[in-house]
Amino acid sequence: MSGRLLRIAILCGGSSAEAEVSRQSAAQIEATLVSIGHTTQLIELDTRAIPQLLEFAPEVVFPALHGPPGEDGTVQGLLEMLALPYVGSDVRGSAIAMDKAIAKDVFRRLGLPVANELIIQPDEDVSLAALRVERELGSQVAIKPLRQGSAIGVVLLPEGGDLEKALKEVSRFGPCMVEPFIQGREITAGILELDQVLTPFPLIEITTAPGQWYDYDNRYTPGASNHELPAQLSPETTKSIQRVALSAHQGLGLRDLSRADFIVDDAEQVTLLEVNTLPGMTPVSLYPEGAEASGYPFDDLLDRLVRQAANR
Image (tube, rainbow, N blue to C red; front, side, top):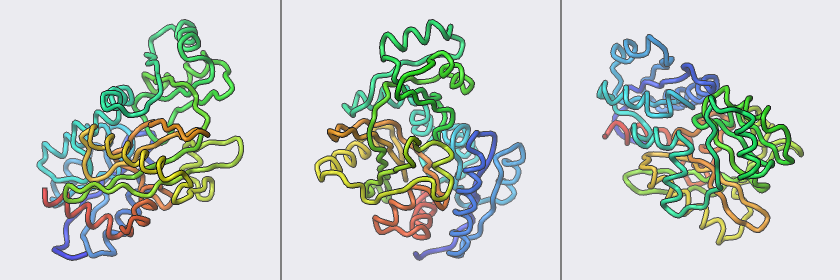
């Protein structure tokens, strides 16, 4: 790490359902950047954020934000209007990646392996929607809010169940996506882009206690999930997943960093689930683990990201 030290604003919190996780990521980011010698200021994403940004006059902004409006292009558009360089993907890439349906359209055009899906609007008749889901996908499904992250609002029905109840529950978050439930191993693949060179991280397999899955609580409770790095997959499957993660990053038009999530079944058939444009940076987050395994300790990773953003 070398070069001039920077003034860095770290945006966090806000109205997102993931606001508290965002604050955890921000605290970790700030402590590390301060240890390097950078000047930082934590700024809560609320009505005072703009005057605080203007007063602090940062040379770069690190959006330590998860979910809308921090990860869907809204904040990125604000920072563009304020002419403030920032870490992460631009308005277009952020918006496309955050909308699971649009992102899957991109993945299909790229020939990437994705599951079939149905999109259910919150104003649809839930009884008719449940019948449509059962007719086209069956009763064993995964139901996800279309524009949330960190498994917020996700309902899994691996053995089937009350589709109407599940659809009502998820519709609280707006439109939802329904996919067939795929039994398999949860794998994640980080991508780091520095100086237009893309580096795929070693794959990580996430496991949880029997009968549980990698939901919000298991993501952010220390010790609630295990991360096996590198994931024990065949060399061919490992390379295939890394290629898909790279293609998804490029196809969505992302920059700096991303993390793609996958399900791999017993036959090592791979399904791409989604791509995160601002992966978590908490003490239990996956992206920093993958970075360190690739030779980028957390302080070096953050220093490179903020300097690259400042140079834009």
